[in-house]
Image (cartoon, rainbow, N blue to C red; front, side, top):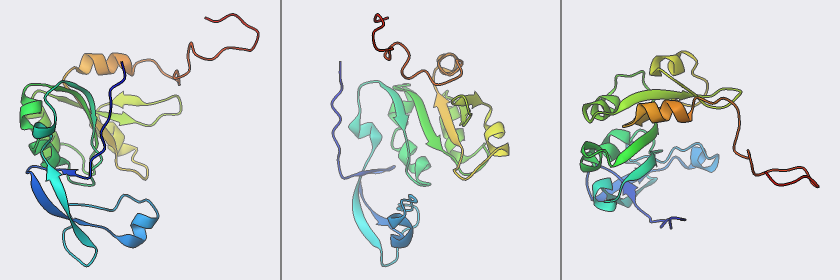
Length: 176
């Protein structure tokens, strides 16, 4: 039941081809995620292959995590067929501006409900996007676009960390 993941040296975008990827070497060394297709040019730019998500996937996807440094709109424009057929159930992405934005409008046009995933001491909290922006810390807020928002709300309803539930046991005790 394990899916094999294939890593490829390509960036997702609206078109297949090549685009300049600009890297701020000083910030990149500190792992600040500053490599971007959105800030083209400069001495630190290199051409990278781009692919459309529509050309990469034909099977349903449970969760698509996008971390493309301000290139979300172009990445999702390359996934119009996947989005229109709801072949992606949930899309998790960062949004630097308070919705509505071009990205959230595109997702809503395809029938997705946009929610925010806020950090909480007891685990993630699903809420309206505006709530995440009112409590913005250092990272841009994470948004969840879901084709099945009832499922997303149910999955994140339980509070607390349960990742090891049923797996850990006290030495000498019977397995659960």
